[in-house]
Length: 322
Image 1 (tube, rainbow, N blue to C red):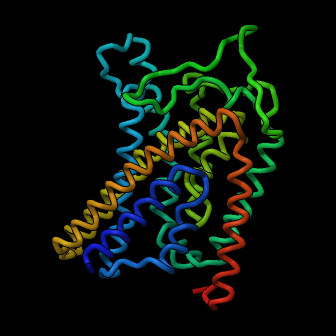
Image 2: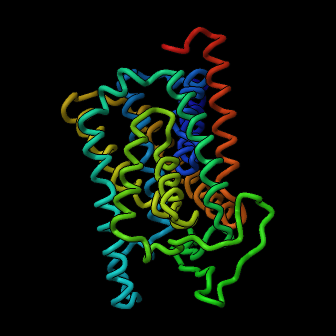
Image 3: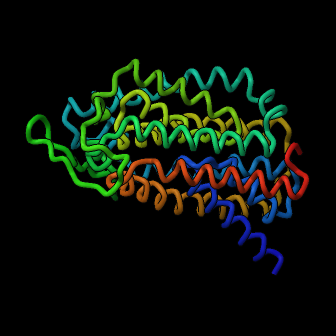
């Protein structure tokens, strides 16, 4: 029974990871709440390792949903599409440089000084307000803003836009999704400079509660990128960032610190990765479908509500600055 209980906890943590990693709602904000009520019966060192490495499941979900889009060696791809894929990967690599530098320099210091409930709650609320304001200012109502390379099974491409006078402006009930096109409505039209600028916005995610996906999507929207492209580019930016972080954590924990991991702990890790993978696929598909009809405003309100819950809960329990 004890093992089943631990497996259930591992699944729940994997679910939270899979949902909050891709939606712009802050995985850290959710994890600190979950940690208050659901704690694995493992050592602190293994828990730290577990919470990072289960992200591999989330990364695999992106690969599985966007296989055709991300594979530059696809035999069925024309030469120009292969070149587009290589350019996309180069843009992703370039956009990851700012966050890599900032993370290496300041990650430990930020974790020591800013990883507390107050900072997380304030970041949730501030960026929630930012999402609402930016979406009202930017609009962009092509039912998500243009081309849908979408998270379809097998990575199939689907184009939901028509160029020039034939572009189809789709109706939506979202008042923030104004019926006008976005300057950047396809990944191919994402410039090198815009990609790099979105990468700079990713640096904001070093502050707990900001959300990596939230900062990059918000940055993309501020720069005039459609919701669809902002979300997809955010997914692709996560691949080197999360994979690199997981690899470094594994090397440090298993090879340098030589943490002894029991068979039960390996089982919990495998279960967590599997849960994160399955739920990530669902979360990505949900987000892509949602922003076809709606803006990111709903996520802004959700962040504000969660931030208030974090402040209220930890204020009542006396753990605001813990």
